[in-house]
Each structure stands twice: as C-alpha cells, then as structure tokens.
Length: 430
Image (tube, rainbow, N blue to C red; front, side, top):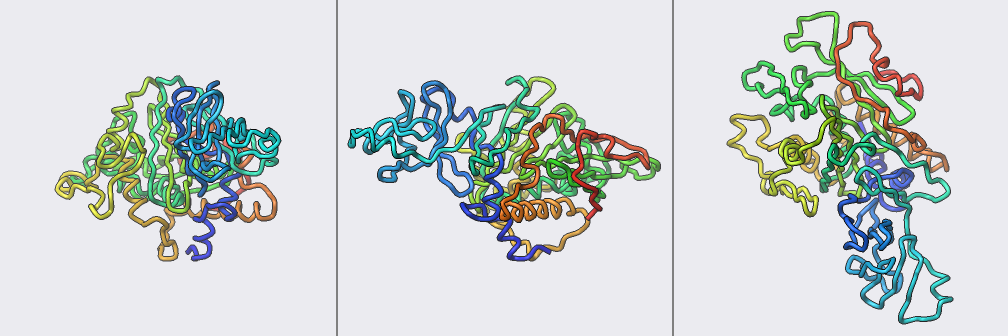
C-alpha cells in the first residue's frame, strides 16, 4: 500500500518539490505546434509543473517559452503584441525575444538597464507536431529524445490533446493498467460482451481489439534503460482450451510518463504532462501506416462530441455533477454509457478526484505495473535529491521501441520479441 507521505511525494509537481524536480529533468511537451501556426501568431498560455509560462512564435518562425508575467510590473504577456522579432507587453511596451533578452523598455531608455536584466526563459524544440520544453538545470540538460512519429508524414500523423482535472499519476496508471482494457473498454474490446461470447473487433485502428477475451492478464516486468517494460499474458484463444501457447502484449514505459499503445495499423504514443498538482495535459499522438482520418479517430476515442471535449480549449468538459454526461439508457446495449476509449479513460481518471487517495487501495497482481512505475518515480526523486540523475533521463532514441501483440509458444522468451529493449537489470515479477 502507498502511504500518505509517498502519495504526496509522487503527486506534488510544483517548483522545488521532489517530483517537480524529477519532471523538470526531462524534455516534455508544452503545447502543440498548431497552437502557434505562423510567425507572429497569437501567444499561448502554458501551464507546466505549476509554472505559468507563455509560448510564442517570433517573426523568424522560432518558438520561445518565457515566464508569463512581464518583469516590469507582473502583468500577463498573453495579451502582448507579437511582432518585429519579439513579444511586447501592452502595459509599458517592454519587449522580449525568445531567449528572454529585453529588446526595448520605452519608459526607461537607458540601455544599461536592459543589459543587466533578462526574462526567465526555457529551451524548446519542435518535432512531430509538438513543442517540447526543458525546465531543469541548464548544466544537466539531456539530449532531445526522438520518437518514430517524428519521422512520419503529416498525413500519417495526428495529435489529440486533452486537459484533465486530475493529477498526472492517475492518468499514467490507468494507461499502464492492462487489465482494465477488456472491462472498461468492453464496447470496443469485446462488442459481444452481453452474450458472454467473444467477438473480436477487427478494426485495425482499434488498440483494444486483441485484448478483450481474457480479463485477468498475468504480468512479467523488467526494468530497462528507458524505464521499464512488461509482458501481459492472456489465454491464446477465447475458449482457453488450446494449450501450448499464450498471447502476449509487450508494453514499453518511458520515464517519466510516456507509453505506447499499439493497434494493427497504427501506434499511439501518449504523454501525460503535469500542468500542476491537479491538472494534466494528455497528448495522444497517432501514427499510422496509411494516411489517417482524424474525424474517424476522434469518433473512436469519443472526442467528436463537445459535451465531452473541446477542440478549441482541449478541456475535458464533462462534469461530475452531471455524472460526466453518462447515458444510462445506452447501458442497456453497451458497457459504459460513454462514447469512446479516451472519454472512458478520462472519466475514470477524473472521477477519482484531483488527487487520488492511494492509502485506501486494495491492489492485486494485475496492478504490478503501476506499482513498478511508482517505485521508479520515487527512486528518481531520491536520486535527484542526491544530485544524481533520474531513471532513463539520458535515453535518447525511442524510435526502435516496440509494443508487439502476438502468440508465443510455452517456453518462448517474450524478451526475444523486443531485443532492442535493453534491460537495466534482472527484476523479479512484483
């Protein structure tokens, strides 16, 4: 069981907190590139690890990330003018470039004053439709990570961002929980669940279609140089009578909050990014073998209905006071009364409250992966407090990482399916 003190240590991500210091050591998404579509486009408010920041694209097309508040009198730069190579505060006209250099102070023309001051700024990198930021110590900045979706054509990639009122760890854990797939996502994982038979969902874009026939997967877990991976074993066939082989899906988990969800024709890369202790931005990057139909994916995820999600603000909009807009009459025909996978996940994450109370849990063997994630995060916090490096921070190339689902013979090593996943040491199952 997780203690209250451990839960606080895991969940608090603001400045100078143990987990906040861990999160700041990695490159993490700050916003979508599409939020800054053109040079000198409107600035974007960014909330990251409890800090209020402003992102803008200058006249040369380069992105900057600064403290949201003007150094002069502390007003927000969200209303600022973006032009002529910088962002200018409306109040007194102070102008900043992307690295925080003060270019102009109209109400104090003395250049010596400007030369001594600089706004707080952070390094950024753009890749794969995302703007990544690094908020940690400059002298410890790790190499920028590469993911397979960064190499995809624009037509083969689409991104959904969902802002939840829930701590990041709730969303990390539910996404790493293999046993919930065949239950919560019964509508798509086993559409014939009402008849107690198994009919496979053959949609090649559906990530749950292969996992609905066995609701009690057995996990084997190993630490890796990027974090950890685990194998979820299920019966090879719905009847369970075939011996000699098992189905296995391998889940790589990249520290601190990144996971991969495979479907036959595409891969989802998911980032859970803490905005603050009680809010999280989930970035779902879909990369397909063929051009993707964003509208189709939105419907599959349940994100085509504004009652649940706003394309403009990215907010998950279904309130608890309205039972998250659950359709109870619809539950006569499907499992959840919710329209899609992402909405079902969002409801579960938000319904636990802004910060879940883990002292009241009753964990079982299928929860072993989330227990391992907590250990990796707590270990990382301890390392950083001793001026060390968090787990996996220097792991750079995520492109070869894989999440296969296939049948294997009894006695066959699942690790042989992913030889590119280098182990950090032999770890016994939880």
